[in-house]
Image 1: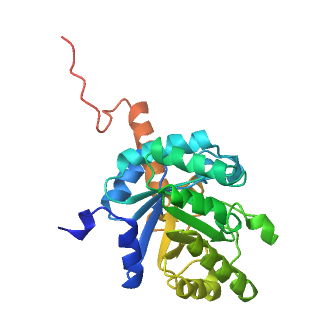
Image 2 (image 1 turned 135 degrees about the vertical axis):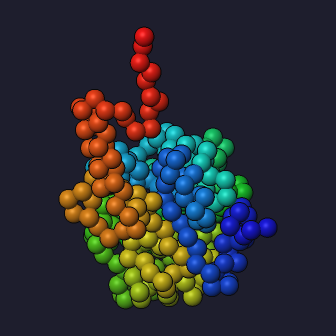
Image 3 (image 1 turned 120 degrees about the vertical axis):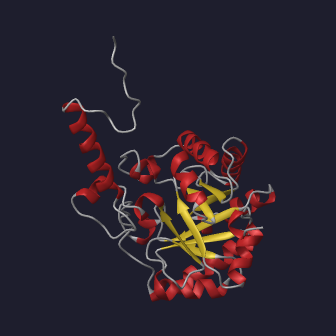
Amino acid sequence: MDERNSPITIPALQQMKRHGRKIVAVVAWDYQMAHIVDRAGVDIISVGDTVGVNLWGQSNPLEITMNEMLVVCKAVRRGVKRALLNCDLPFGPLQEGAESALRAAIQLVKEAGADMVKLDGAAEFPDAVRAIVRAGIPVFAQFGITPQTALQHGIQYSAASGTGAQATAEMTAKLVDEAKRLQDAGAALLDFTNSGPVAGPAAVSAVSVPVIGGFAGGPWLDGRIRMAHAAIGYAASNLDSPKESYANVARIAFDAISAYAEDVRAARQIKGAAPVKPTD
């Protein structure tokens, strides 16, 4: 069987770490994007809780609600066939305690079809990790300088550009200890956000579960996670200040809609539309 067509499992990800094969994770928030990145052969598709900021224009990643996450995760689930589907718990259920976090995790799996749930700031809530794992739900534990924990480090989080910070050498011992505690609590996968080149390798070598990361991550990790929208340059800001990405879909979309508008105003046939037959 072609490996790219084989469904991804937690043991498969853990084996990839042991064999030194990098894990590819992508954040997606709709059916079409999920279907595209799944066909591209990524290993993990994650429904990130920054959907409110990056897709809906909210000002803070903590605004997203559980009901909104359920709607988005359901849509993404319909587009995923091969990759492992993760869904983030929004801010709130984890902070309210283990029972609340467990109820939310069950809801994301039972109602929205998630294969795994991600807990931001999970190192402070090991009992919640254990409760969710005992229920048979794999946990993707996020630690480091994250959207939900940045203020604890005295840093203002920016969803558009990460925090602009990375873990320092002085923070390494604490963060490595967090990675170990998360593994001991049963986490199947770790998301080390803003790891940097010092703390990142230390955490990777300290635990046997895969450690991946996005902002301020690098080849020292077991894999990388990136928003699909960022990878393809799909943001209005790319029209004026293109950022480094694998495409500039914002410009492509702008040019296409501009051409469509010109055809309409010139009374020309619209591309892709069924031709209208003249009446007798």
